[in-house]
Amino acid sequence: MKGRVPERLQKIYLRLPHPLYNCHMPINEPTITVRDDVVRPTQVEINLDRLAENYRAIQQAVAPTAVMPTLKANAYGHGLVEVARHLASLGTPYLGVAFLEEGILLREAGVATPILVLGGILGNQVPLFLEYDLTLTASSIEKLAQTDGAARAMGTTARVHLKIDTGMERIGVHYYSAAGLLEAAARCDHCQVEGIYSHFANSDDADLTSARVQLARFQEVLEQYAQYGLPRPICHMANSGAILQLPESYFDLVRVGILLYGVYPSAEVARTIAVRPALSWKSRVVYFKVVQPGHPVSYGSTWQSDHQVRVVTIPVGYGDGYFRSLSNEALVIIRGKKYPVVGRVCMDQMMVNIEWDSAYNGDEVILIGESGDQAITCDDLAEWAGTIPYEVLTNINTRVPRVYIHE
Ligand SMILES: *Cc1c(COP(=O)(O)O)cnc(C)c1O
Image (cartoon, protein in one colour):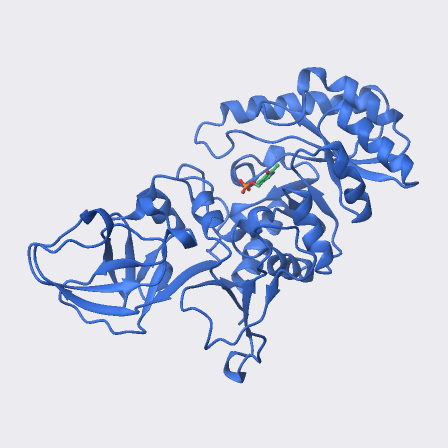
């Protein structure tokens, strides 16, 4: 399938996911290049310039604090390796991922930027962290000891960030028993404790009471460094919600996720930094038909018209991550106008009612994105599907090719 990208697309790179991405730890590049004329018409388009603009806007807003983009879940659906390379080219000082495999994938792709793995780990994973020069999260005294032991056995030093639980009740040592972890960290001779962090549960709310309580708890833990005369490592706590609403929580580094991709974390959050979506999701009309009144459309016959209508078929479905709950709920844009998805969304196809308007095979269909003065946002899809924009983005799976645009 390897082919040349035609000249007119010189600045557009077409990528298909590595077939192993979903089932094994990939050992090579996660993508292969294919000719644009054989790739399926359903594509996710990533505007790398917008990503850069968002990054700079966030960096400016939090300066002199550093920015750590989080690239978990395939960089929120935007493509892990491509996004990491782009951010590295912008000089990002640190990258965050959720899992060891994501870090290894980036190292195998040649990304040399420091990488913090944010998720919980098992002791037997520590040697791989060391082998791939990944920073790990020590979320308990036991895990810190396992890390120190593994590093000693390998004759090396592990780079770790300590995780303090200030109210999320997920991973990390509770703020009220953090002293033991700090003491244990000071005693480790094969761990470099580079950072300490916590995570907000409610920073994207309109009401910041609970976020402020968490922040105060974290600050209390950090005061112990001064008490014991220990040097304070890199401190970080803010996610997108806190970046927008709680400048007091910036410390040395902010961990930005959804905002970097140009999407706000909630409807209530104060939009204090202007960003624009980097991702659009497009397909094309592959079939046109006239449907007679009383002839229901798709599985379960959940929709029918009482008059003759024109219905087009789009080659995208829940097997790509277009939620089945969008059946009879979502709109798409064709020829600059919004039309409803009718009947159940199938695994690989869905139908759109264009009433008596015209559309032709090959016409562009926008699932997420802009066309003239019309737009369908990730927030729209989230609302129609009864979920949050995070899930809309991360649900677009690797069967959908990613196209990178650089103006
Ligand atoms: C995902 C994640 C973030 C980023 O969250 P956003 O709300 O997308 O900004 C920050 N920190 C941790 C620990 C995370 O898991």
